[in-house]
Image 1 (cartoon, rainbow, N blue to C red):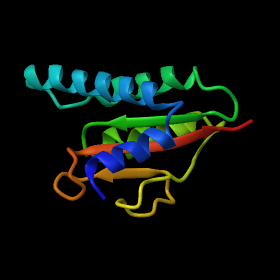
Image 2: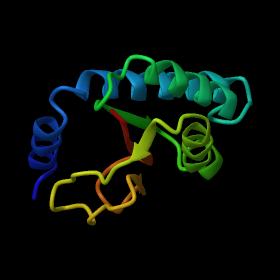
Image 3: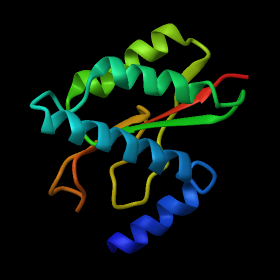
Image 4: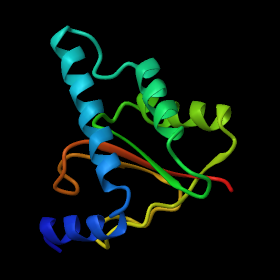
Length: 131
């Protein structure tokens, strides 16, 4: 499967959520770049929690929230998601439907490691608002 075929499958799977997903990734990556320039860590966990909390406010009952970062640091990824779910029991993790080139996902969280899937390092999490 080519990179373009994978991208096409992802576009089809997340057609309604893709613009928010991309915007979230761009914002997170830009924040990381700015902090790296200042000699700080790539992402500030508190800022990530605020971004996720804000985005959650736009998700209707039964809707899906994708959280993604361009880092592989556990505290900025799984740590943020775990804290968010603890404070927001109306959201639950949901398996990520992924193209065949990726491993089956049942946890709702996936780290894309550079060199393994022809991608940069990314973290993706899928949650659904109950109701």
